[in-house]
Image (cartoon, rainbow, N blue to C red; front, side, top):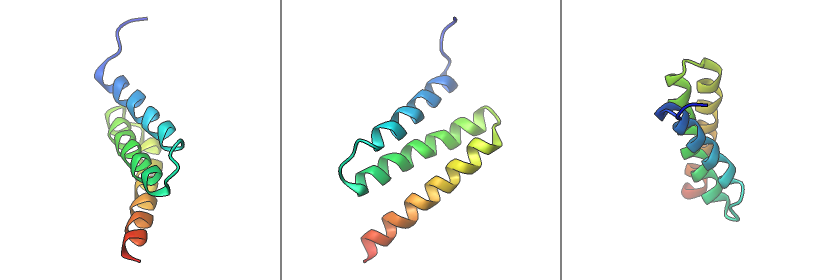
Length: 74
């Protein structure tokens, strides 16, 4: 097992953020941290050329943005 490169670290960071987001009591914090993790997954997916990873995480980012904006607007 060799050293972990930057792209792999990005994947681990994204995974960690998504996992940590589910520990939040506040739905706003959960959505924000989850969104940041999903953004990192989009970057990771682009870096490893994994279109399914990019697409599902773009969807997750969109859902989180929608609900965060909706909550703050109403």
